[in-house]
Image (cartoon, rainbow, N blue to C red; front, top):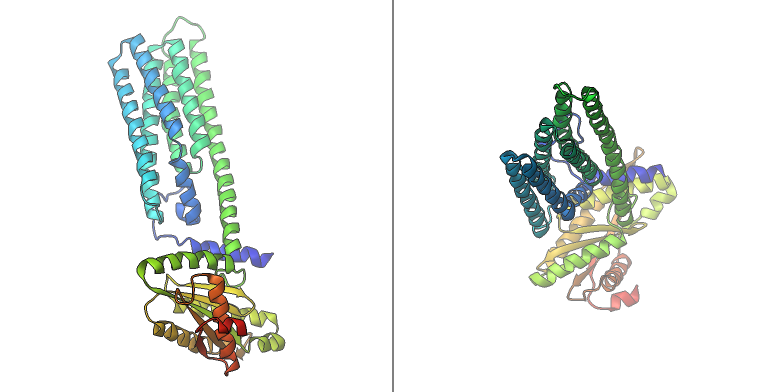
Length: 410
């Protein structure tokens, strides 16, 4: 179990390389780079998947502004209504642009989209605060109740919807509530015929402030719960597609990656080379030095393979001492042969395990696609057949699969 958790942490780090610096990083708020990239992308997707709340709240805000403007004859509130409608339209345009654009593949791009969402949220929060300041100063109890309810609705909505981005949520909440609390507290000390005027407004200011504080705690709880849930799901998905010992792709991930590479090869009129690897002499290491030494050798083999291939190539461990390398975008068979010879040379170099120098070699069978087909299982069987002949001929050799005879021999 401990090994699995260590593997999850290692895969999370390798899957989510953090950039050097981010503009959203400052004390008091979590750094987006602390999240795995797929998790952070899911959180930004959540922000841009909620058009209905934006339309609904924007319409309510504009309607209340116009209602209060008619009752008070205030041109300022008409301006607030216009600004609220414009803000809603711009926020919807941002949602549309995000959905229509290409998927964002890096932290910096996602941070720019988060900032863009934040600006619209902050603008609406400021408009809500200005509306409350204007209505509270006029002392119209029914209208005042309406606009303060708008603050509560805004706060509840953003806490439930965007707590996954706590910075945006917290700042939006404070922009809407702090001016409202200040306006309530200041208005409490204005002269009025009601003997409990001061007490009532101070109590209301306290209630808004208290609910704001509780909302901030809720944001923290929801954020940590969301991070735990989405990161756990991400880690489990990685574990399902990764070899637990080496961190390489497993058979499931190999199949998915092969299909993508094969589709690209068909479009580009190129080939794919499927290299089937089997370590020579590995069983003797396990028998003599034990499985920990064997595991150390397998991990080092994986690292050496990763250092030899390009980014578009795929390395997988099928189990035991069997590995597969999918070499993409191959124009000539000689390119596959050169890689196979390099693999044999690098894998055959000595290994160190617990102060013991260990030596193995590797045999390679190669199947070319689409020359020999486009189905992964057929190609693996064909490469395995060529590997069988390579081992029979003296090991540490690479042979091409010519036709289906190798598969039958295997």
